[in-house]
Length: 137
Image (cartoon, rainbow, N blue to C red; front, side, top):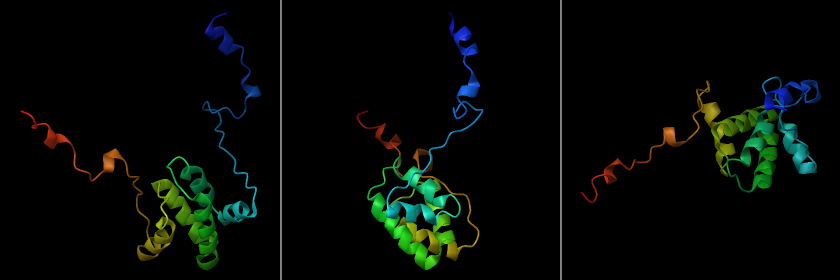
């Protein structure tokens, strides 16, 4: 049997959540502790959940402490503002200790939120290595 024949025999209806373009299966949050339930409860929008899903891949540390800080901040500022801040932090890959506290202040200072730029090699202010080319010549 060829690969093409095998593909034709797969019943796509058996795999409704397969990420092949027909549907996208997103990981579901399954909070277990009271602290996790309180953090996910901030999420009027999707900011808290998105931050939680992005925090691990960007190498965030002390995630539980940051979750607790977000819950405390939500009691002062309100769930909607903290959820928006968490969403922006997730989009920008910001997970340092003071990032969550600085984002609502930034939003309050400038009303319209512009394009969020994720820091990477294309947006680096680091000097390049072109100056090293002449070394040794």
